Amino acid sequence: METTTKRTTWEKISWTWRPASGRESGDSIVRNFLLHWFPAKVSIESLSWGYSFWLGTISAVLFAILTLTGAILMFLYVPSVERAYLSVKDLEFAVSYGWFLRGVHRIAAHLMVAVVFLHMVRVFLTGAYLNTRPGQQSRPLNWIVGVGLLLLTLLLSFTGYLLPWDQLAFWAITVGTNIAQAAPVFGEPSRFLLLGGTSIGQATLIRFYVLHCFFLPFLVLLLVSYHMWRIRKDGGLACFDQMTLGLKAQEMSPSPTKTYSLLGITSGTSVHVRTTVVDEDEHTVESSPNLTRRLAVVVLGTFVITALLALIVPAPLEGPANPSVTPNPAKAPWYFLWLQELVTDTTVNLGGYTINGALIGGIVIPGLVVLALLAVPYLDRSPAQAVGVWWAGQRRRVNLIFLAAVLVVLLLTIVGTYLRGPYWNIYWPWEGWPELPRKF
Image (cartoon, rainbow, N blue to C red; front, side):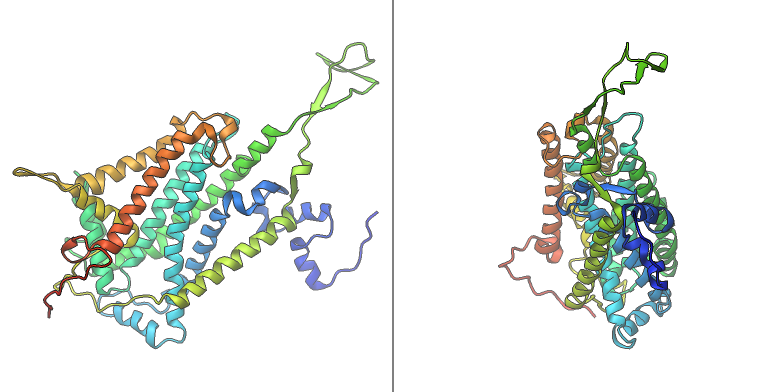
């Protein structure tokens, strides 16, 4: 019999995070607004560091860091072509710890792009976008939501790239919007709508600022909320499905005083059937404090790593944006460099005819990749035994094709980042760049 003791004020506030019994653990999930996201119990496998690497949680933490630091930066940044660069320069050199605040925001943005991408890779390789209980789950829909979140994350980082209004930002956005312009029918109108005209100027800056600070974060918040709710509705991580599929049903002897008949429970034992149950208790633990402790470690670890990287890798700030001086080479943001490289590689001269690489490599191929990602849950015929399993033998061919595509993207990004030099020529690491004429 449990004994009750008088709680202090702090214990009354914090008991949900460190419950003293199984009953308190269950109550804490119901009564605590933040913990209400989680089920009362979670599988031990889903808590492991090696299954999901907690990439989804890390992505959410990075988004929270971006929201917090971005809200503070809004008080210090002026979205005008005359003062944007100077306000960022003040952050770097005049505002106390402004350089650190900007650095944390920048590193968190880059990390979020990488982590969301890795999260998608993890989900694909484990086949976690497939249902194991048709009619009760909608994991393909949640995969589509995840693809949408990846695209929104890229747009968030892209719109924020212009705000410092320096040479790096100005020409990176110029390259990116020029690639988008190659889309047939909608390319030019979309670019005009995004830029607010035919060139990058004040209208562009204010559009990117509003998109970056309000519309895109609002959409991300909505989709993340639905994404997490959908995970709950689908029964948690896919590894939990494998646990239930793998559990052996335990036989239970029927009650000697009951008969389980077609019409219901009757007295006597003349007609009966043997019943079975599945015991999940030995494979699950209370969410509080088991999940919450690991969640706290992930939150703290993500913040510490982001802060350390902000201290080690300073945020760049080149000269003020100058439309008349083009850097050589002019590069897109790093997460779009594979597109810029693909545009170059698909631009081919055949006699007197030139294949438009901006259309093929910048629009058609990426569009087909996105369509393939959206369709793969409905085309994949992997069995239920392969869902939620790393490197399942039944999914070897699908995973190898996917990994080959990921490798191509990574190789193109590396080439565009480290090997492309002046005039977009290839320069190996041991080769020096030619001396370029200075522009004034």
